[in-house]
Image (cartoon, rainbow, N blue to C red; front, side, top):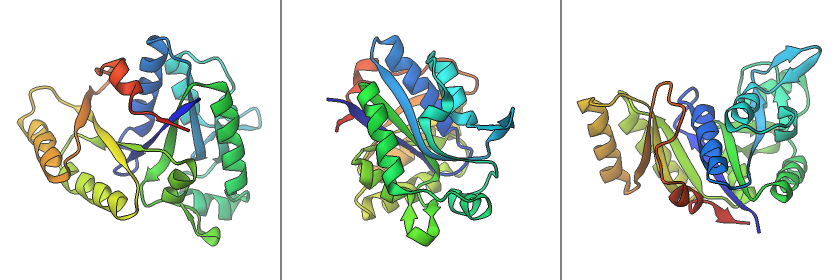
Length: 227
């Protein structure tokens, strides 16, 4: 049976895609059949008349997966807006049925599927359908790992994200701090504080430009839930 894990973040541009790529790479280097999926991606570039989902392209390249990035994303939008607004402008609103169909197809292909969210946890996916990111997570029945920036302000954003997820019945299995600076007193204290305030462990610290994720691959694989 396949297993999955959802990657969300404390906001936009905290490095979800960067960390997700390192996660998939770590699993594949450990010898596991690991893949990637994203329901909706905004801010794609057009190449030869085709929108290319850059996030998926980066993850596949980093993890050494030879496949079309469009196979890993259900909805791709040109405008770098929230998916609900991009869909209003471009057409093609997210449909639950397609998300489940594409997710199921990839679950049949990969033993470990890492699913990346869009933006932060409170992200409208299809506003007219009352579909939010949390609804996607619940549909897929996955635990989440939170990616946060290690710098100033992260205590507030992490605690708010965790409390929102708990209030909405979304299990969190750990956190990863991105853009970490070794030796930074403030960033080490940020880790200490968020762990004390949330009761959730920071499982890895990723320095800027890191090409590997410093985490035990067996422990990482154990975060994934059976589907």
